[in-house]
Length: 401
Image (cartoon, rainbow, N blue to C red; front, side):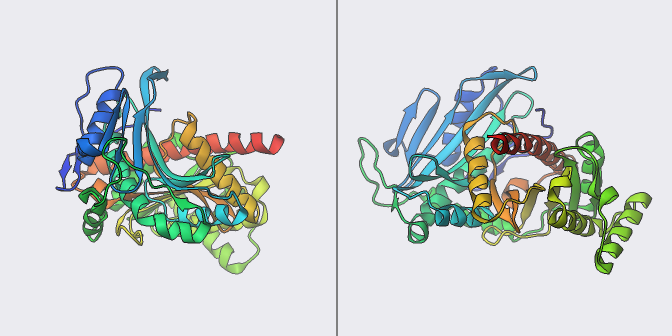
């Protein structure tokens, strides 16, 4: 699990984010937690410190940030860092609840809304794996933690109306309930302002990412603002070799895409490539060996504006509520188990597919040079490949039980 790349720091006033943080110890946990507390600018009167974490109250809800004990993996000393905000309690685990959460997670940015099994609790969670070679991911984690605090505070009442339960209000053990919200909970406005600007990605970024991450990819197409790739799921045989196209429109798209891939003239191919893969899984999902990865920089988030959208589509097509249940199950496992793919996004359902959605806001991408932009795309491909392999194992195990 080795990630690459780094970039400059950004100071927003409301949120201080540094892309590079100097950490000298093999166990990064305590210093990462301290850096996250500094980024949130938490007040001592509304904070409870722990040995490897802290809890704080921006207003009615408690957000907890902590680092698990360091663990060795792939020759690295890795620390798994979590952020969690309880939003609702006393929620009935019904089909309606699971479907509503799956729908909301379609618009995930850097956290997931999760119904915790057996607890009747809905929380917003994210996590990341940090080691000496990828300290720059702290930049993303700071943004995730800040957005999580702001979004959970904003969504509580509306979510209660939609799925029931009650808002998980609590107070500091000494200071009590916080009457006025912290200014940090307005950080969404900072992200939206930056989201009105272009992302800065160019065609060469996506072609370089496809080339550098080739060992994780079966076949990839790209243009100036997007990449589509088939990555191993059950195997490595791409849909574009097997799919029998019945309709004239699909047949033309398939032919055009194959010609573009063969000539390495891939302008316009990601959309056609995605259409072909989705058409194949609509008729033969159990025979599809690959998952579909889409990375797009021209598609704005409805709340945060421009940024980088990453979608990982699994070929399995569970029906209705079962899909929503599986999406929540995958979110729970990513939040609580060791997967080596950062939970900076959420599993949801789209057109019957299980899909992992992540949105990296423009604020995180700002001032990135070509090397940093391309490293981010390469890492997104690598993490998606790790996630696809892990999800295939999880779903195979659930089907055998």
